[in-house]
Length: 511
Figure (cartoon, rainbow, N blue to C red):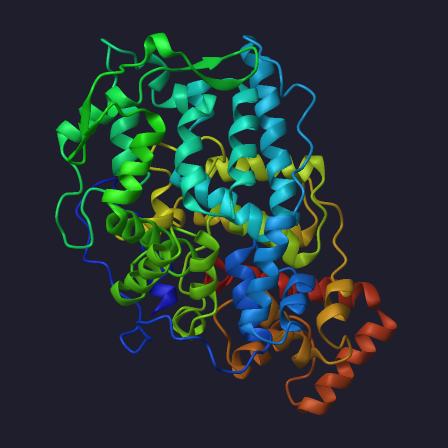
């Protein structure tokens, strides 16, 4: 992959013709054969970057000390399942028709999610995955309290079996309003939710055999079965009202009965199990590996899902411990999303997520096209899993904003306080060795590896600026030691220059 050329391409207009997607390197293992190579900082960092937002040093070291991919992944999944839910805001059980108040509350809840993403590791990464999969937007349902209930539901089921998600999501007030199923009643059928339940949430348009997975008749009949659900605004929950439900016989996916909401889910998971497994496996692959699917690996993830009754943690274990996942062609092969870029930078530099910084992240991620709890459509964000449009996150228009945020954080401008790089350097390197510092910071911040010649050049251009050209390597190291001893302020300034150079590299846009 020519990463520099890759990053330089501008995003085409939505749905405009696009070149055929380019798969990952042809030599990549196309199976879920377990990874049997060395467990080093490189592999641990790759796992953390893909399962967290950014590779904070403590998380990378924690994964490394587990001793193997299997142990590290098992620990991450166990921790995600055991993590307590964050407190809900005081207003989470009340509604207001005041638009300004709803907006303020929504911003508060978004900022709260950024804080939990920074601390919540895999649980929050999976909550974001399900938010993209079961997309709803507060721009439609408006009530911030609906967003609290919706995200809490996703968190509760983030790292568990698929069925509870598919059963419960349609009963959340956010989804009931977003896709109009609260209007769906006997004699007045609304097909919106039924259609997306099939196309976007479970089976997709075509199955692994290339054949359509459902018909328009299935949509209409499923919509009849899904009638009867309304929003109880007093409890902020979905509520079934039998008088609104079509209790007649329906034929869904070839099966006839007096089906209701949960029956439709059971019919999907029973009679379209292969399609569901393939669809979900493709989404998991796109999220954790690359938006252009590898057919062999997707088929094996799907097989795990089928064999375990759609147990998502089982699929995660198989994927995240596979040789495919740790192949050099996968590391640094995905573009960072706006959330990964912004929160990841803060975690990697060790910067606190103050209210002011969190609001800056909220505003910037919205500008860059990823406002959490308000994706552009029911399809979620195309940059995650659209094989033709996954370059959407980085364009000639967004790249200056992405780099500007990183520059400001390192320089301590705007909402960022003065940044002292020495604690980070002392955590990962030897402050007396300029070439070692450049190498270690590059490995910490960049998923794609730089060569020793490249990191040496970065050290010469930043830390060793002003050293006589005829100095030997040993003399340059001594020159740096004198800077740090006699002028520590200058040393810190040069370390910030090195960090700025690293986060401005095209490689920093990749994960």
